[in-house]
Length: 262
Image 1 (cartoon, one colour):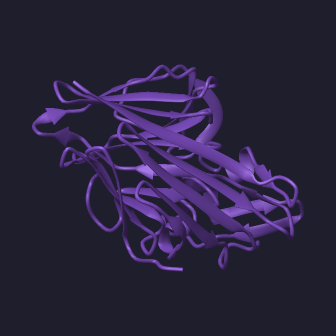
Image 2 (tube, helix red, strand yellow):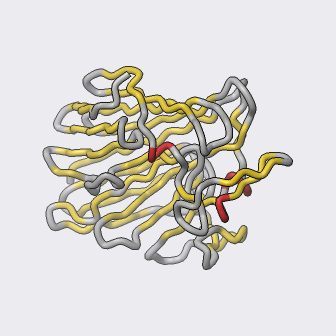
């Protein structure tokens, strides 16, 4: 069960997987051009067992109230798995499967499995959370940091959400939905037909981020990168839109990035 970095290749696409650094995709290179912002906290990390912020780090499960560490005070953000070492369950030239066992401070036992599969023109990330003990609420998502500029071309973002979650001053959804507003964004959007966002670097590359899930957070307030984050519920979703993991039913989600050269 190794935690060493893994390199996947298909055609002229190359992916670096970092089990020891939060199970993240550390890099995606197409023809030698790096699409993901580099650095220990960047690349694309899995958000599990929750996505985005939990208000005040507290969530309720029935009568129990649980407190998560406030790693984005006054809130808890992006789950616990991105700070942990994952294990490599299996690997081949173009696929890796990683596992992570949920542990403290998360109050429930369970196993997360992530599959990273590369082809010459796509990368698919799939994740599941399963338990053989107590049921619990959870979320799955991915947080990629795409480089805003590639070879001098600035990215253009295109998507048509059905709504935008109104954001309070605390950066959390208020519970109200509004018509989508122009960016810059650190906002959650609803796409009931499934996430479908296109990033275009004019003259260079078009990349589509798709998922069967209906929630996506778009974050483009930084100069270096833009983030398109498919997830199974909105921020604070453990409280507002809980999805239960049970011994009979795991929580599963996937996202695919597919690209076309321009």
